[in-house]
Image (cartoon, rainbow, N blue to C red; front, top):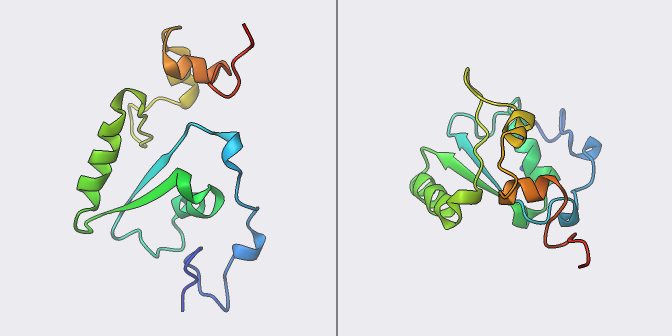
Length: 126
């Protein structure tokens, strides 16, 4: 009897009515999240990554389940579409913060342009 969105019990612990509204695409127009969950995390109400599924516009997030047939291959295919502009967020001992990552970018990087607000949607007039 789980809620399909928050994965908590629908009648007792569903948190959907306390969630903020879905964010608009205009906040991050050039970003797509590829969310990889281990098959043991699916329907685990304590998994906070699933909150992204409720907050982000559907066209900006896709769920892949490690252990579900075909999902890992589809994830790799999606990453390879634009591997130079793909960033993997993964917890680990040698992981960087996003701030550290951004501070090390060369000034001509597309990521640096995004950081500095020079996206296609916000280019200053010439």
